[in-house]
Each structure stands twice: as C-alpha cells, then as structure tokens.
Length: 115
Length: 107
Image (tube, rainbow over all chains, first blue to last red; front, side, top):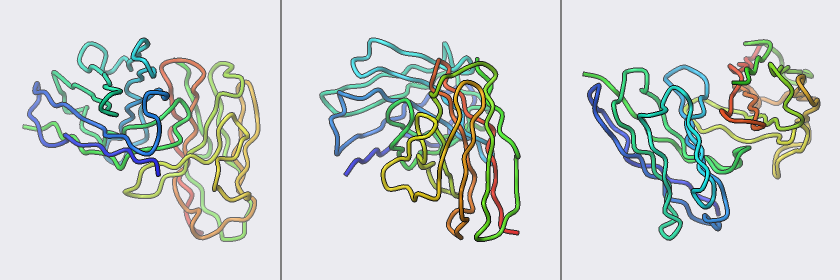
C-alpha cells in the first residue's frame, strides 16, 4: 500500500524556518517525481515545488522561490521541504504529492506562521 | 503561468442529477489535465488524468473530456458521497496550476 506521511509542521514566527519531511513507503520511491502542494485555510490548492526522481530537475512557485528548498533522499525514501523567511501567507496545510498528476497524497501537515 | 479557470465556482444539485464542471486553460495544454475531488479535512483524491482517463477505483459515473484549452468533468448520476469540492490541474508546464475549485452542494 502506498503511503506518504508528512511531519515537521507547527507554529513558527514570521521570518523563522521550518523543515518538512515526507516518509514514503509501498512503492519504489526513486522512480517517481515528487511535489509539495499547499492549501491555505479555506482556500484552494497551490502547487509549491517539484523534484524529479533523480533530483536533477527542480522547480518552485514564484511565491516561494529563493525561500524554500526541496530535496529528497532516495536511500531513505524521504522528501523534504526546507522553508526559510516564513511569512504569514505561507500558513497552510502542506501535502507531499506523488507524480505530475498526483495519484497519491499525504495526509498533510499544518504550518502556521504567526507571532 | 497558465491560468486555470473553473466554472461554476459553486453549484447546488440533487442526488441523481447529471452535473458538468468546466475548466478552461489560458493557453493550450494538450491533454495534460487532471481532476481531483476533495472533502473537508481530507487530502484531494485523483479522479481523472490525461483529461479523460479514469483513475483506478474511481466509479464509472465520473468522466472527463476535452483537449487544448477546454475541459469538462461530468458526473452522470450524483450520489450522496459526491458532494465535495472539485479541482482541475494542468501539468503541461511549470508552474503547475490548479483551478480555483468548484464546490458541489446538496440542493
């Protein structure tokens, strides 16, 4: 069974940092591209970042470019999102998501940026 | 960035109705379009990919069509469990973009 389990969310002050993790199981992680997608409270879905299976190709949404860094460790079946210089508008549930047309999603982890 | 526009933004319907949701892309995306269903407090669920391919395990009352810039999601006979919010997403080019969502409510 495919499972994606996010962790690392929480309350952080504006300007602070947080690192999200996503543990993958039930499939060959190294064969799939991965994404982070977020959803602000009561709002729609927003794609955040993409990383190819080998980490050779990475993309970011303009809203997070220069502040967020996506990475993966295929040996540990894990995906990461390092988030720096956090802003109130980054408050959202962050989902780990497999592949371009996302066939599997994690349960999400809530990031709240507030003083 | 490619803008995805869904219509309507919200819609009331009854069990048994046939419902169509439209998604328009600001430029051509071939068939690189997916549809998702999301219920409150849950992660989205993939329904359709490649514009018209039904994801495994999704009931056949869901169907998708279109290519280029205009796409539709049709639910042929609404069931109670179908009342949710639906999103389209293009994965033709980066940044990937979603429609604003269509909330389907019970009449």
